[in-house]
Image 1 (cartoon, rainbow, N blue to C red):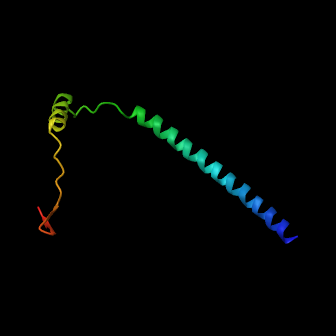
Image 2 (tube, rainbow, N blue to C red):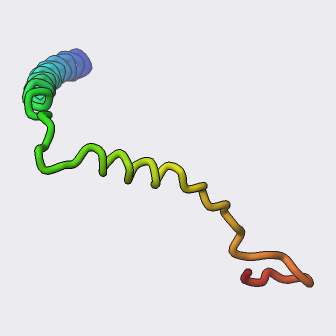
Image 3 (cartoon, rainbow, N blue to C red):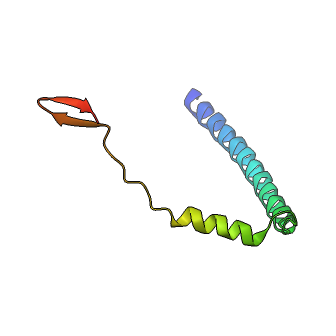
Length: 83
C-alpha cells in the first residue's frame, strides 16, 4: 500500500514539475522573441560613427600578425628556468 502511494505521489510531483518547466520554457521563448524583435529594429546605424575610419581601424587590427606563443619555462641543465 505504501509503495503504491509513494508511486502515485511521485507521478503527481513529476507532472507538476513538468508543467512548471513547460511554463518557464514558454516564458523564456517569449522573451527571446521579444529581444529579437526589438534588437532588429534598434540596429539603425549610429550617425556619430564614421564608417570609413572604423573600417580603417579594423583593417589595421586584422593585418597585425598574431604573436607566437613562447614557453615561459625552458628545461636546461636538469631544471626549468624562466625564459
